[in-house]
Structures are given as structure tokens and as C-alpha cells.
Image 1 (cartoon, rainbow, N blue to C red):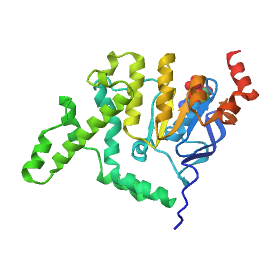
Image 2: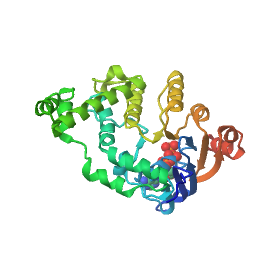
Image 3: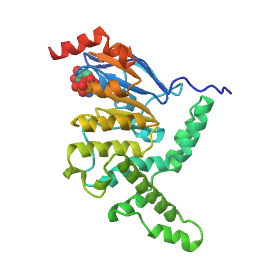
Image 4: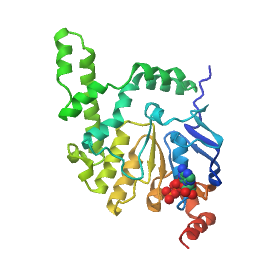
Length: 307
Ligand SMILES: Nc1ncnc2c1ncn2[C@@H]1O[C@H](COP(=O)(O)OP(=O)(O)OP(=O)(O)O)[C@@H](O)[C@H]1O
């Protein structure tokens, strides 16, 4: 068996997406190496969100291939969390009926259920072969506990009851295990909120909070799942200069692979290792920030967009 670690964590090869007569992506290829921060920029309508939607499985490409860890991959939205891929939304798609903490916990539930598969995945990464078994195994064995989840949800506190049951029998009961898991998920959610500067809002409802705080919550939700690939869709939208500076630090400090779609050029140039520029669905430049900012085609595309 080969011990070669794949060169690229995520790769898109010759991706084309057509919506009827409109070509939203036209032969786009991109390598996203593990641990790198890769930006995708371009004027409005260039195809950035479509590219994210392809990686998330919301849009099926008309042509082209996607590989994850060197192996052909067909993305499906409901598998992303288990595969360690998290995405923030352009807006702030939070559940208004849940508290901030509960919203962040939603991002965690599948992580706790993916432990067996995660191990399978990591082992397979080292062997250069993603483990299909691991990927599917947790689907059957590790479903998040709705019951355990709800126990915590109603009270805003993790269930103590489950843990007591486990203690009396001398064996952690299934409910006790769930209660413990719920507690861990609450602590992980609080940690993520703390990291994003939003822990003080944990027990409030997101609908009542300022937009900039909700953006932080959205980030916390994605980070709480401890993704290996973090996809940020316009995370700086609606933030002021100080908040954007804070965001740049946070992105740089993540130890994950990051894919960033963003209009705020200062942020993109400050954090990205490499940038792909799209214009009308076509890739017009790919390279480090210093090259991209000096690229005439890129300047023309942006000038054309504002003309
Ligand atoms: N589901 C769809 N059906 C038809 N056309 C679509 C669909 N999704 C996107 N498009 C079109 O594809 C093109 C690329 O859109 P996309 O949203 O990917 O661009 P973008 O670069 O993300 O733009 P923005 O910066 O404004 O968010 C646009 O012309 C858009 O109208």
C-alpha cells in the first residue's frame, strides 16, 4: 500500500457549470492544499458562490471533476459536516427559535457523531486512500442523539439526569453517554463563541442581535465543528474596519484549510496564500496576492465591473 500523502486536500479540475444558456463557471481548476488559505475573488456574478455551491454539492457541475485527498469525490450537502467541511453563509442563516449557544451546537452535533469515521478518514489520509467505510460507518453507528440534544435544548443546560443514571449502575448508560456528549458539545460551543468574541450572547436569541455579532456567531458555528476545510462566504460583509482586522487575525490563526470568497480586497490580500480570480465564470488569474494585485487582467475586470 502506498504511503504517499496526497499533494492536495481538495482539487477542482475543469469544472463547468451551465444554468440553461448561462455559463456560470467555465473550465475552472483549483488546487487547495491542506493548511492553505485560498481566496476566490471576482466582480459580481463572476461565479464565486456557484463555485462554493459545487464544492458543497448544492450545484452539480455540467463537466469536470472534484477530488478530495486525491480521490474522486461527489460532494453531498448532508455529508459535509461528517467529512469535516464547514461553510459560513453570506447572510446569517441562524435559527431564530434557538439561542446563540444552541445555534452553535447545531454545528457540533455531527462532529461528535463522526468520531469513528474521523479516525477512519485520518488513517486513510496517511495511506493516501480516503476510507469509504469510515465515511459510511458513522452514518449508521454515530447518529447524533436527538433526545440527548433536546434534553439540553429545553433547559439551556445539558441533561444531568442521563449522567446520574450512568453513575448509579456503575456503567455509563446510553443516556449518560449522551448527557456527557451534550455537555461536551455545550463547552465546545462556548469555546468557539469565546474565540469569536460572542460568548456573552450565548443565551440570547440571534434575531435580536446586531448583524456584526451574528456574523461572529456564524463563524463560531463553523469553527465549533472543528472543520479541516473551512469555507467562508463573504465573512466581512457588513463589518467595520476594526472588525475586519479582527477577522483577518482569526482566519490566519485557524489551523484548518480555508477557502475564502470575499469582496473586501484588503482582507483577501492580507490573509490568502493564493487567490483565484474569476470573471464571467472564467478563471483569469491564479497566484499569490502580490501577483494578483499587479495583474492587469484583474484590474481590468474590476474596472469593467464599476464602469
Ligand atoms: N441557480 C441558478 N440559476 C440560474 N442562474 C444562476 C444560478 N445561480 C447563479 N446563477 C447565475 O450565475 C452567475 C454567477 O453567479 P454567482 O452567484 O456564482 O456569482 P458571484 O460571483 O457569487 O456573485 P456575487 O459576488 O454577486 O455574489 C450569475 O449570472 C448568476 O445570476
